[in-house]
Length: 173
Length: 88
Image (cartoon, rainbow over all chains, first blue to last red; front, side, top):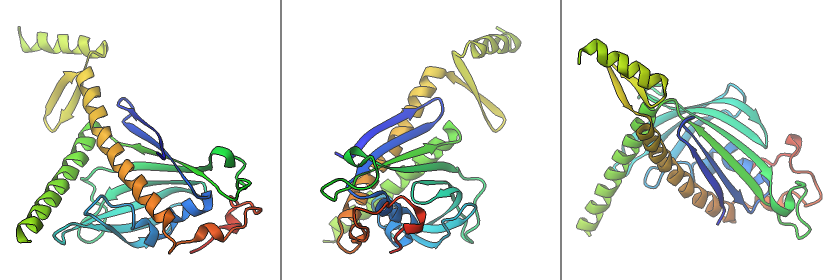
């Protein structure tokens, strides 16, 4: 199990998620920096993400959309607030309108990522057997309980649509 | 009890952090703080589930030979320096 811990702080409205991977820090950094790799894991099941802009620099922006099971598009944006390759990345994640501009009426989540060598490889130089392990800590900060409710409600809706699409598939077969 | 009296009671309970108020448009929602915290924990749990799924997908991606970046750096280099960062 690579999930080390998951701490929910209901007062601060933060989720701190810690996982470890069997790869060096540099390699894990690429899954954030390379949009083609990011696309392979960011979107929830049934909602793959496509990044059409991904400027990983302080103040830089990313633009993406997730495609639902029926071809519907959910556009979003990132605004990088901190970039220190290959160990630290912080950004705001929000929703965009059809023109790709930030939708101010929608919730914005703050995400801060820290990568560090883990386990026997804590020196960062690689273990004797050539293996390396990376600890990835992701802190998600939400603005308010109402916004958290809104985000989860939308996720549920997406999940429902996915379930409906799957039912359609089963019925069609 | 008059509305003013209710407001006074609500203010006392709010100062004691037993309840909290939340503005929703013109309304003020007053609810028990413990209930609020329990709900927040529940909602954060949804994001925990999302990150658990993402962790599995990242593992798959890192194990994919189509991105063999693990072999680019010999174990003797210091891979944490940005100047030596590998670009796929």
